[in-house]
Image (cartoon, rainbow, N blue to C red; front, side, top):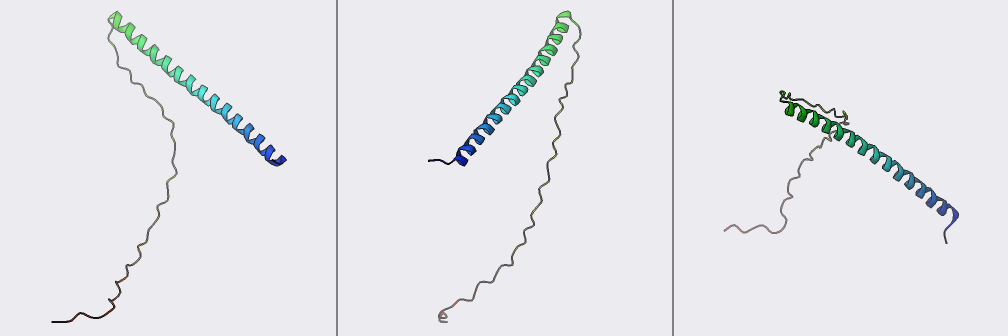
Length: 100
């Protein structure tokens, strides 16, 4: 049997997940609209170029510059690794070898 606070926590989690799904759907829709807008602009540019070619006008090369959002990354701190001095091998124990 579950207690009331567990049931409330489950309801709260379900509500949060539902809100997240709605937000993700809105973000996806906005991204698709932006992509469609970009595609339509590209088709319009191609149509204009084709019209110039059909009329026999010289075609100018257009330079399309896409602006990329600038994202600054935090620089990771470099860890300084100090090497430990190596220990000498301990002297061998046991019976010494015979010298012949």
